[in-house]
Image (cartoon, rainbow, N blue to C red; front, side, top):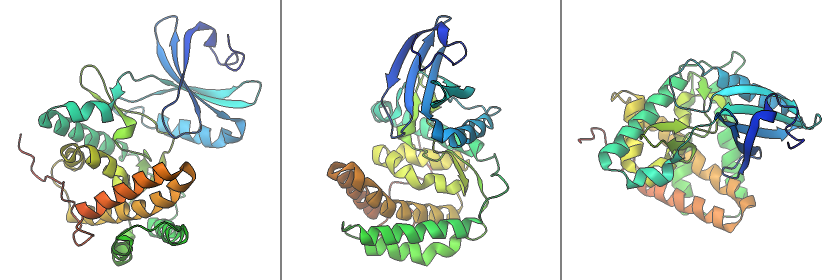
Length: 304
């Protein structure tokens, strides 16, 4: 038995422990199978992360009553001689959605997109904690930082002026936005598809509270894979009654995210920067250089 895990209750019943290397999180992740056949996900972080990880674990427990296929929280505590904090979840077995979905029929892609939207809508029924900064104040601060960082980073994005112009013209939309629980990184890269064709949601470690519609800022990864899936996600979220204001705000959040992603990618090297520049180029095409606020891949009434 690995001493790192020995203080975790029932760790003596684990007969398979395999490191999981996917994702951007700094957590150490492990797939675990216990003697009784149960499959678990163990996340470990440095003890300095205790308060963050406790808040993360407690927040995910708020989703317990919601009918979504996801990793459910089981246990939380300190191990490794007081040096590490652990969170234990149920394991969701499936293949990466980004591998599975493009090979499916258009009808199936849309069905799973609708599911992704319905799941997100359920999560957003959980209200934010009471001490939130007003959304416009909070997000305008982020926008200011994104624009400053982009201008200072020395990497030129063709069309950045169009992106910034759209952002500046639409900041007023941020006023008086309702805030809720947020997954924090909701896109196809954090979804799986089970053998029976069901959609599962993973990696809640970037959870936050804010405008629920901000969660569509990373739909670019869904749309880059399948515009049909991305359309389903929007239509499923709104039960086929999508307000015009949503598209204006989604465009604002996507525009802001494109600027921030270029600066964010720099420490990860040229390859990652190039991916973000390419995605920003796609976004500019989808939005006709932000002459429109409805992306060209969006299908309002998908006919099977």
